[in-house]
Length: 376
Ligand SMILES: Cc1ncc(COP(=O)(O)O)c(C=O)c1O
Image (cartoon, rainbow, N blue to C red; front, side):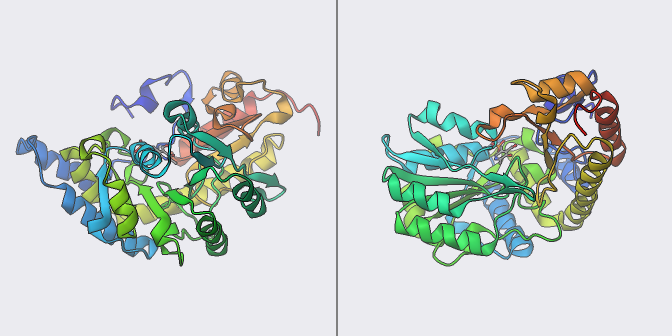
């Protein structure tokens, strides 16, 4: 925590940082050991460890998610967002449109302003059980907007923690095929999918391979965002060849440390990650149960995946900065929901990827700090 990272130096300790999608349980010890070896040997020159990292990713994906990508169809980038932006460049025309699923991981909302592409919202809808995808709405959007060329999924979904089941993915593939749309599936949160749900990689759904790009990384799983490493994986030569038309030097590449760290995590991290998944599974239940019991005006649905909780504080009329409002009331520093676009009003995103003691302190502060209920 005292390591100089963004989470713990930005506004902590005045407020408890729960705003960034990074967990506090790292680093994975074998990773630290490996990086120490690299440091001890002064291994800072140009390196050849990326291929090894890609192989480790493919084996991890096969073991953990039943999808074994072909290492020859995987490109390493410096960040998942670089993977996303390069797909927008490769698979859409300047006049084309990209579908987003708000409320959505807020940097995706920069795609329109920074690339000139039109963005089309396919919003998740909420009912009593939580946030859901409305497949009929997607069908309607695609049928009426021939400019749509790319569907950007966040699978599992940040911030709602919603997963997509096999039959939903199959319907998306059918639609994408009918309207000739490329699917970019950001699966960075896949490793934290909890009992009761399964992460189904989009690429294994029948018919998906020829039109799907998977962008992912070990940075969420192993809390190594500062090391800048990600992969963009194809399941088909055709799409891969189109992607490779982007000059290689615009695609970035991981540095030695990122590459070594990711490879170590993917090779040796199974047991460590299993324990984290169990811990965060307990945390999601604990958070939802305590809030339901002690602060029922804060509405939250049990996330199926991710270590993120999407808190609805609209009962308090928190204004247009609900995260800041919550922070000022409670000292728990959450991300403002409106940044996530449609569906973000009245919400704040809170990270529960921390120790149980700190999670309890955050919940205590929320319970103690919020105004007395306005309506019971
Ligand atoms: C869905 C999603 N995609 C991408 C990223 C960022 O990945 P990177 O730092 O590799 O661009 C995050 C980080 O929070 C995320 O939640």
